[in-house]
Amino acid sequence: MNRREFMQFSALTTLTSAGLFPTLSLADTVNNKRRIVVLVELEGGNDGLNTLVPYTDPIYQDKKIRRNLTLSKSQVIDVGSNMGMHSSLKPLKGLWDKDQLAWVQNVGFAQPDGSHFRSRDIWETAGTFNHIPDEGWLAQVLPQRSYGVDGIVVGQGLGPMSGKRCRSVVMQDPKTFVQQAESLDDLDLECSNPSLQHIVDVQKQLHGAKDVLERSARMRHIDRYFPVRRTFNNDLRSVAKMIVGGADASVYKVSLGGFDTHASQAVPHKNLLHYLAQGLDSFSKAMISSHMWDNVVVMTYSEFGRRIKQNLSGGTDHGIAAPMLVMGGKVKGGVLYGHNPDLKNHDNWNVRHEFDIRSVYGTITENWWGYENPWANQGKIDFV
Image 1 (spheres, helix red, strand yellow):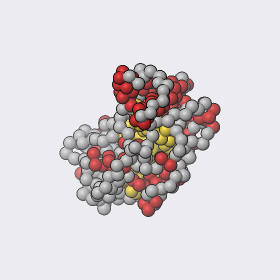
Image 2 (cartoon, helix red, strand yellow; image 1 turned 180 degrees about the vertical axis):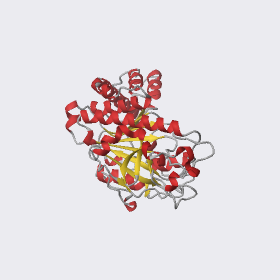
Image 3 (spheres, one colour; image 1 turned 30 degrees about the horizontal axis):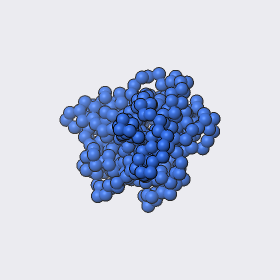
Image 4 (cartoon, one colour; image 1 turned 90 degrees about the vertical axis):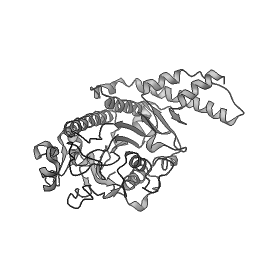
């Protein structure tokens, strides 16, 4: 390996950590029993009370508390139990009616401090306020899987897939990844130096990844399910193409930013939920048409919810617990898991958490993948 080849490789390996991409045919992809999770991070701390809305609660409706953020009955989609989804989530109502979408209410963790960074670390590692593991929560369970790549991030940062044991890939977008992989010359040599041999082996894996992504790009029939060209939609479209095209990954992660709504929240939050619903609706249709919907669980998460009481800037400040949306062909949907938010017994205007995040992760780990659950003492929720 000469210096130029080494520099080419070094530039690209910032996008990957030992990914393995076996070649699968389209028939294999459609007919096999892979269990896939698609994580959707709502960056900034989503206002759960205006996402899954306790619209009949007198405290929520008190104009002295939420003023111009309060949503009326006509601004929500009733899902029973005196709760309603924000009207911007209307594209997802069909999945709720088909029992393919559920909400897990009041998810959080003990001793929150309101920091974006600390909260994100806890969510991504299944840690606690006093202990942050040195690897993501997925890295703690996915090494039980003995083949393929563990996860693919379309965006930035490994997050819950960080750690030496997790075989994961980060790409800004598949097209850029392929272009960079093409800049690497093929290497066909054996090295006595273990470190150099590892580089050669990973380089070969990168070319395998490139082949899968090129095959995914040919899944043009997926495009018709994503008519809107917005970054979030494009990222979900890429994930859909990789799933259908044969990238053998257990987890995909995408992000939607902008949820840190400290000021003038009403319209931006409404728009963000519209973007979320539009993208997830498109993704579900693509999966259904490709006979992959029963193989996929989509799960949203955000580093924290937001406070019950509106601030003086027309927004909401960092809170504690918030609902998580879960959807998929095998999700036990049409259900609100947990109790409605208790706005009377709050913690300094914060909704207290009912479910620890590790009970959600344990449910995915044990019920969906059938792996050993390292958080079994936290219980499960059995939404899948």
